[in-house]
Amino acid sequence: MNTTHKFLVFILFALMVQSCDKIEMPYKESGGNQDGTATKKVLLEDYTGHLCPNCPTAGKKALDLQELYDGKLIVMSVHAGYFATPLGSPFNADYRCEAGNTWDEFFGISNAGNPNGMINRQNTGGNYIIGDGLWPTIVSEIIDVDAVATIKITPAYNASNRKLDIELTSKLLSALEGNYKVQVCLIEDSIIGAQKNSDPAIGGAVILDFVHRHVFRKAVNTAWGTDMVAGGGQAIANTEYTDNFSITLNSAYNESHCSIIAWIYNADDYSIIQVEEKKIQ
Image (cartoon, rainbow, N blue to C red; front, side, top):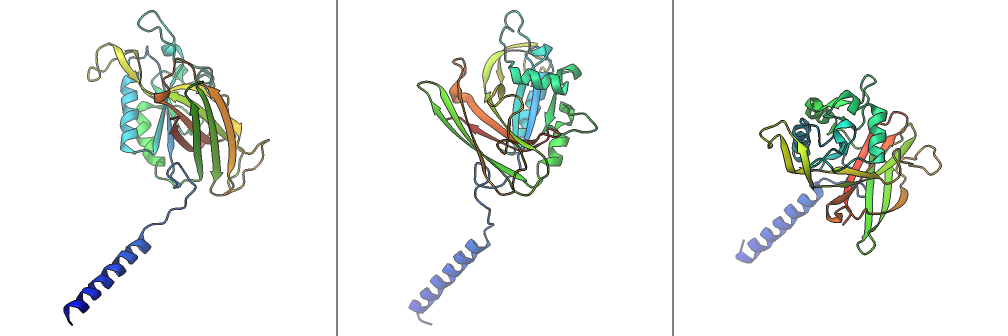
């Protein structure tokens, strides 16, 4: 075989290998979550307050879990109950909101003590509340299950008038029994403020410049959301349902740190089947 023939054979072999590599690449259906794939995501609600000395440790645990699961775990910090009430300086900030107070009272979280939380609002033996010591175990048990629904969040923010328009597209990937709703929330990250603390590894007994992460600011469509199917009724598998919402951002919020968290939940037992997060800009 002369040199020219050897070169042509080499080129042909290379093209065949490249073609095989493309065929063997895993195929993922588009039209799912933000990256176009149907990935199951989990919501960890951390109920907290600036007067709660044990809450910074729980908050760090939530952040560590979020980093461990690399985009599959979404965290929302809900300031509610006694430990979240404004006090004299330096604890005069108020991070509470109406929906957070409603959930806290309904699920009885701060009455059980803080730090506590919920994971996908799962009900175990009539109890939704999960102490931070169990967060790693519970998250690990459900984080890798197959997705049964998808959500796409499309925000449009106008900085001149601080108007935020949100288009939400939700879809069930298979037929599911139950009445499903969509919940849309606004959070703000990295708010600097005072915090009581009991963990020397984090700081002193009072941290004046504590960074409050993913703080729940507002329920865009009320505390209990909106029917996935307008007017109620059974959602049809593989059918996209679109909702549109508009709010005006509070002048005190830093729009660069604001995101939308949205989830689909079963209104019969409040369990969350899918959740997504998207920065507003």
